[in-house]
Amino acid sequence: VKMQNQYEIELVGDLRTEIIHSATESKILTDAPLDNKGKGRTFSPTDLLAVSVGSCMVTTMGIAADQFGIDLGKVTCSVKKEMNLKPRRIAKLTIVINCHDEIPEEYRRNLELSALNCPAHKSLSSDVKQETEFNYL
Image (cartoon, rainbow, N blue to C red; front, side):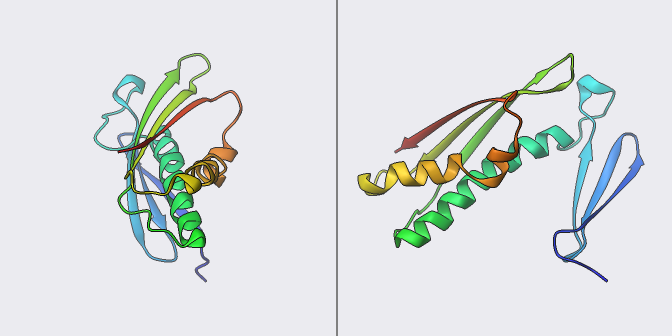
């Protein structure tokens, strides 16, 4: 029986994992990073955590925009991850979200708050420093 939001993960060799989304059979590969005994051929597990936060933030903004009845248009997000060595963990995420400047001023703060309150962002430990910048270009 396949359930929504269930995942299967297999270590397939060379510190690479294959992740399968059970409901859709979609696959993601991860590699250990070059600085931690891996080959760095694709996203590392901590890369996925970092980009999950950015992806969740812009998705949540899209949901909020739909609720406000406004067109969010093209939104881009860049994420910079900084690691702590001891203990090895994500120390800081710097996130820049770029939106078009035609988004009405009166909606911008609520869109930003929706992003900052997305589930992935809220799931991170307070030990992870987060800097977020919103630009309207």
